[in-house]
Length: 175
Image (tube, rainbow, N blue to C red; front, side):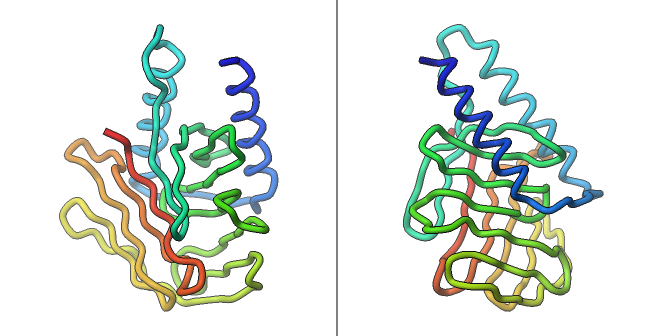
């Protein structure tokens, strides 16, 4: 049963990556995020009977536990129920499942950011990310984004606004 869960999770990861457009990344905390995800997934695969690495995610009012995977320069948080969130180190790039009738795709970082999904396509403007202590913050026309780091520089929580109708995407490390 565990192999089936891993196969489904990897299939979801591949699906998320294939739907995403090609993006290049050169962000300082992305390396920390990838290293952190690799550490978590390595701990998961080497644990004899330990619980797998888990992040708690919510999209709007619907939540789910997700496991992190790295694929094609992204961290894809996914579970066997079909919920998945792709993150590039700065921005959530896509959201699958969570009761959505169609996936949400997000492109752009600073300046213009485009959202496409079941509620149609819209664009918003976003200011550059600003570091304040251990928190990266970004102000956007549809709501703010936050990336919280721990003392080691690893990402602990991610919040991205999808707009008033869709709510926020929130990811945080389960403790």
